[in-house]
Amino acid sequence: MNDKEKDEKRQLLEQLIKMAQADDDSKSIEFEFLVLLVTQMGISKAELIELFEQYIELNPPKLEHQRILLFQRLVLMMNSDNLMDQNEMSYLRQLGIRMGLHPMASEEVLRIMNDFPNKTVPSDRLIEIFKTFHN
Image 1 (cartoon, rainbow, N blue to C red):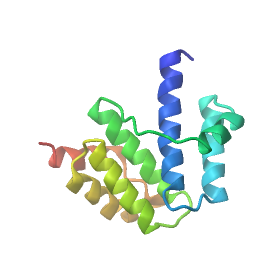
Image 2 (tube, one colour; image 1 turned 90 degrees about the horizontal axis):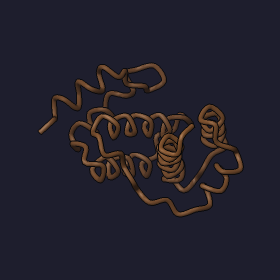
Image 3 (tube, one colour; image 1 turned 180 degrees about the horizontal axis):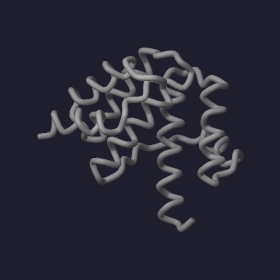
Image 4 (tube, helix red, strand yellow; image 1 turned 180 degrees about the vertical axis):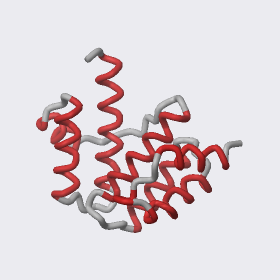
């Protein structure tokens, strides 16, 4: 894995950690979900624990499709414990805006996610939503 790939994976992990912490109650199921992800990413559990203890700055990807993908992954993180806390929802809405995503598109994704298995909006539907609201 080259340095760029490692940086991208670390940035994704940082945002997922922020999502897990948004409700001020990092649950063991969210942590286990992250452990599974870091194992697949080739990042150590020790590094994951270290990241949990650090302040994490928002550094969204430059390309819009990457920001949409990050938003989708954050929605998955929020739903990993099967609880939709209002703090997490609010954080996700704010983060979408800060990443430059259309607020109505983000809201539509949050509105329809319950219509799909595991609250996972299919990629083609996700793209369709963001295209509809594209400036």
